[in-house]
Amino acid sequence: MLDELQNTATRLTTACGEGELVWHRWGAGPVLVLLHGGTGSWRHFSRNIAFFAERYTVLAADMPGLGESAMAPGPAEPHSVAAALAASLAGLLGPARHYDLAGFSFGANIGTHLAAMEGAHVSSHTIIGAASLGFQRQPVELLKIRDKTGEERVATHRLNLAALMLKDPAAIDDEAVRIQDWNTVHARLRSRGFASGSSLKDQLPHVKAPMRAIWGEFDQVAWPHIPERLAMLHAARPELISEVIPGAGHWVMYEAPEAFNAALLRMLQGQL
Image (cartoon, rainbow, N blue to C red; front, side, top):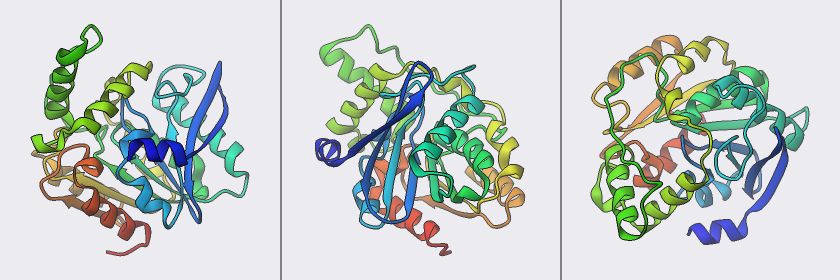
C-alpha cells in the first residue's frame, strides 16, 4: 500500500527556509489537507489517503523539519511552522483557496494555528489525537533508536509503537515499523516538546472554521482523561462534532482505518 501511494502521488514543492516544503497529492475534487504527527510524514495517513482520494483532492504535507521538508524560517515553534504551511498553501492553491483541514497529534496543534491564520480559507478543521490542550499528560518513555541496527532496531521500534502509538500489539505490523523507521531517520524538528502546555487551546477562539475532534479510545497521550478534553472543547467550541473510536490508540487512523475514515467523512460532510 505504501509503495503504491508513493508511486501514484504527484509530488509538489514550494520554497521553505533554505530548502523546500514537500507535499504529495492524490485524487480530485474539494481539497482535504492532511497534517501528520510529530517525528512523522505524510505516511501517518497511509491507510486513509486512498479512501479520501476517491472523493477529495488529498494534499498531505511533510511539515517543515520533518519528512522531506526543510526547516521553517524563524524559531522552531508552532507559529513559524504554521506560517510556513500557510505560505506554501497560498502558493499551491492561490488566493481564493478553500480546503478542509485535518491534523494528527502535533499536526492538530500546528493545524489549529494554521486554521487561525487562514480564516475563511479553511472550511472545517478536525483535530485527531490532540495534545497541547492544557491538561497533564501521562508520561510515556520512549527508547533511543538512532544507535541501533538490525533486529534490535526493529524490536525497539515495536516497543516505542506499543508505548505511544498503537494499543493492539497485532496492529504493530511490518508496515507500521517501516513507517516509523523512515519517519525517525528523516526527522530534524524535535516536535515532542510542543505537546505540553496549551498552545492548541489558546488558538481555539481565533479559528473561524467549524471544528471536529477524533480520539482513539485508548489514546496513550490522553487516556484516561479524554472525556475532560472533550468537555473543554465542546464548551469552547459549541459546534464541535466529536467521536471516540473504540479500541484504538493514539495512531487511530492506522489502527482502525475503516472506523476512522467513516467518522472523518461524516465530519467533513457535516453529519452528526
